Image (cartoon, rainbow, N blue to C red; front, side, top):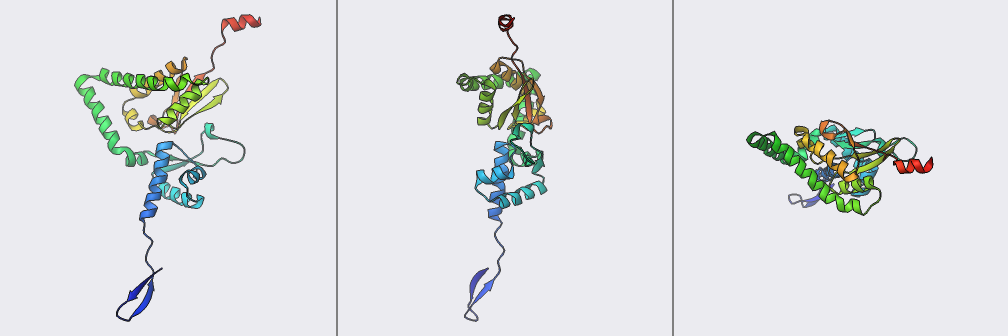
Length: 239
C-alpha cells in the first residue's frame, strides 16, 4: 500500500500498487545459477548458501521446476547422510542449461565442427587429449599434497565447477561429478569424456571405468575406481 497526494482534492489517498517483480527475478536467477555452478542442491542448502528463508527458496524452486528449468530428483547415494527421509535435490535440466549456457555451447560446438570439417576427426581427438593433459597438469599439484588421491581429485574437480564427491563402494569407490560445465559440447563430441576418463586413470594410477555421464542424459557423471590389488609381497608375507 502506497500513499499519494491527490492535488485536486488536497488530500492523501492510499492505493494498492503491485509489488515489483524485479527482486523475484534476481532471486530466482541466483537460485538457478547456484545449481548450475555448484551442481544439484537441496532447498535447505540453497537457503543457507544464499541467505533466503526456506519458504522463499521453495517458492522459487517450485517456479523454476514449473518453468522446466529445474527438476526435482531423489538424491544420489553419494549425497545421503544419516537417517530419515532424504530431501529431494534440484537439478538443472537441459532447458535450464540452454538458457544460461546456450551461446557458449553453440560457439564451442560450432568451432569443433569447423575443426572436424576442415582438418578431420583426428583434430577433435587431439583437442580432447590436449584438454585431458591440461587437467592432469593442473590436478597433479593438488593430488601430490594428499594421500587419498580420489578425494583429492574430487576437490580439484569441484574447484573447476564439477561439484565432485567420492562414494565408497564394496569393490572400490565412485567419483561423482554432480555438474558438468561442458555437458552439451560433450554430448556432441564424446571424445572429451573419453579423454577425461583417461586423465583420471593417469592421475589415480589405476584403470577407471566411466559408468554414467551427464552428457548422455544421466543425472551424475560417475566413474568407478577399483580397490588397489594386493601385491604379491603382501600375500607372501601373510602366508
